[in-house]
Image (tube, rainbow, N blue to C red):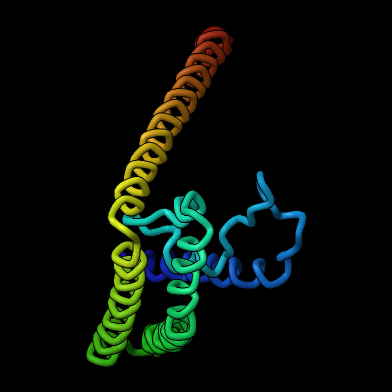
Length: 192
């Protein structure tokens, strides 16, 4: 179970690193949205975009001056976030090293996992503090309007998710019917 958690955590971190690299490589004008606005950078998304409190795309609806202020706040946290990511990667390596030993030293393994979890929690705290700063720096009216837009966005996502689940369920039921028909139409051993 822990191996599965470690693999999932590793996959998420590789995804975030890919976002940083993709942002640096593909940062051209072709990525401009309607009205010439740039979408949020991968670095900004990695810090706050996957967080349930503040979807980073919602910041794009802020007036330009407040949007820039929010981006600065997020950018200011990136160096520390990157340092934490490097430390997390190092600590994951220690967990892996402990697991690769011919005889598992459970004490060493437990210490490595504990250190990794503490660092991951620190990173979550940094992300939460960054989001909190972005939200508390907004004027009351903008903060309330932003939260309404976030709720609309989430409602739309929920509906899209429900529709997708229904489509997947329909496809699965259709495939099951097809398999049952194939089994019914297949000659049985007794008939031969």
